[in-house]
Structure formats: structure tokens, C-alpha cells
Length: 264
Image (tube, rainbow, N blue to C red; front, side, top):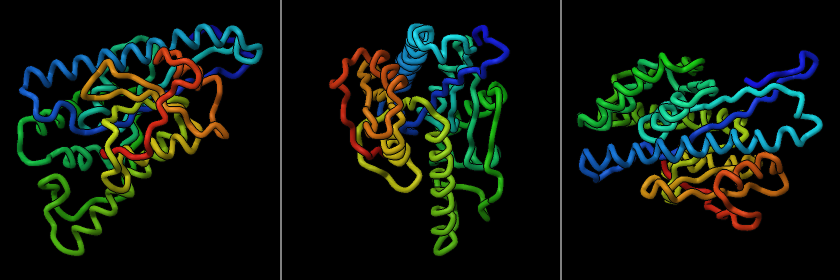
């Protein structure tokens, strides 16, 4: 946190991540790990350049110049994009990292078991490693499904399984809503694919655009492919929009329009 006047509330800059759970799918293990390293590097550069831009813009604002500053990073810690981004933020100085979980941690980690592959087990191990490192954890702990999760979305059949899938989707949607409401900037690891259902990344991006939250769009299959997505101009927070543009080196008018859809 930077220095602050005791009479002026501090400035809080919050970045949230959304993105695909599958990163580097189809790649050999070594290539997948290299892709993850590249993506962590890109995310770290986005966060670092955000701070550099704030260092430039804040002193120029009579309102914000005397204020201290706090940097916050939000992640749901799902496998894939959420975990990669959390790792990148935790390795940078000055960022307070928070986990927003749709279920209690023990139940949530079960949802990572898409089959019995080592990769899925690794996602659980990663989650277990990241959670204690987060500065704050908020979990929506008001529901448990009736049986342990298997094959990704539960081992129940019939009506119960459908109800549980729907309830999980609603919980993901709730967390997505929380991310957008708190974020000044969204980092989205997105292939540009259409929605995969309620509560996925598509909902987060679409809601962010409607709510005026700028988005830095990183292609997870091409880590150096970074763009800004301009939100609805009627709701956009112009100073933060400038942060997104400077982070991606895009001039006004060059922002990628972006679709409303992406799968989780």
C-alpha cells in the first residue's frame, strides 16, 4: 500500500479472473506446463502494467493523488485459469489475494474430478496448496449434494442429478456475480467460444460488459494474444478503461468488441 493521508479513504483497485478450466488440453505434459508458464507470465505482466498505469494516473487526479492504495486480486480457484492467475498474483508484491468459492472447500475440490486422470488430481493438489496462501477466503457453504462427485458432475441419476447440476450452476453464477460487482478490471482467459451453460465464464464476461467493467482478454492458446474488451460505454468507468487500454497497448477505438459468450 502506498502512503496515505489519515483524512482520506484509501483507493482500492480490484482485479478478478475468469476463464476456462481446461488449459493446454491435448498437449503433452511438457508442452502443457510450458503453456501454463507462458500464461502466468502474461497475467503477471498485465497486473504489473496495471500498477504502472495507476502510478501514472493517480497522481494526476486531484481526488486520488493524496489517497493510499490497496491492490486486490479475486479468484474462484477453479482448475485451469483461476489457479494459474492466483499463482501469478501471489508471486507479485503488493497484491492481497482473495478466494471466492461457490461451495465449502472440501466439497468444491470434488468438482475438479473430471474422471480419474492425474491432471484432475493435480488440480486438487494445486487448490490445496493455494488456499492457505490466500489472504482471505469466502465460501458459500449452505448446500451439499447427496453423493460424492464423480465424472465431473455427480454420480446421482435422474431428477436428483439434474437438480444438483442446476444448483451448482446457480452457485457458479452467484460467484461470477460477486466477481463482477467487486472488480474494477476483469482478466479473462478466453478462446472466444460460445456459452457452455449457466454460471460459466460467458456469464461473467457478458455481465462485466453490461456493468461497465473493462476486460483484459488473454487467449489461453496464444498467451501473447492480449486485447481489451470495451464495456457498454454508457456504464464504463473511464479511468479504469484507460488502464485496460494501456495494459494491452491498444489505442481508443482499437479494443476488440468481444462476444458475450465463453464456456467455462
